[in-house]
Length: 326
Ligand code: PAZ
Image (cartoon, rainbow, N blue to C red):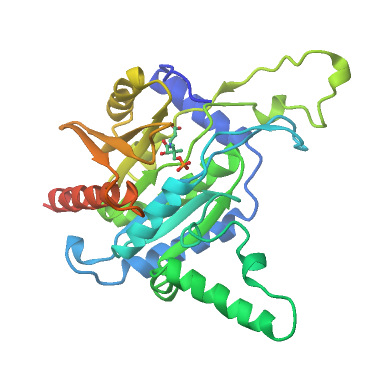
């Protein structure tokens, strides 16, 4: 679903954004979601923290891929690749560093603190005869705390708000609500947009209501471009927030050029460029001041690239806060 960055004039971009939101199926329980996010942001922004502006910083981490439904009563959909590993791992590092994290994730993808567990942890740990079932549960809990030592910090400190999405319609409406709720934080807010977001969608009003029938012959369907929301995030939703987007390509020859284009076009503070096959080993941080390669420490078997990446980002965010508050 990744496309070229089709150029739209400012007016037609505004029109396509309005048309996207007005025609999208309304988000269920949006008032409740807004309240939860505002409460989380308010609670965390009043907590004092050392350094940077004196208050806790809040990052919205997006993770997983969005779907594009092909039918209103959806049986079929187009999906975007993302396991959720990048988002979940990064969220853990941000919590560890004292950030409050709004984790906007695709339902069913990898979640913070449970990514190192076996695939079927409950069944693998439970023994079903006698009182050994109780021992099994205790082992399960100790496995979680052993593999995720910072879980208690996240739970006890109210540092992680998990919000699931499935479709592109849900994702963008939720991102808008979160961004507007984070706007009052100014430069203490950060967006770390690792989700793989669909570039094309079927507008709700032109979408078939019922399951598309194969008896009608070959499928001829028109997808329209999803308007780029990064620009409006920067301009209106949360103009002072520190914004990082990701660029995924499979062709290394165009990766850095595309990342550079996104950086300038959407006025991101950083774009993280990664290639599908090597994304767990290395990424390149693209900024206006230059390109910084970041590698996983291969000498450590359990290391990941998110650790040095999030460390670098935290430092850049601190500098940004200092410069913005001046
Ligand atoms: O979720 P994951 O760990 O399997 O993959 C992460 C990723 C490649 C989806 C992410 O790093 C990324 O590049 N997201 C943006 C994708 C895009 O260009 O739309």
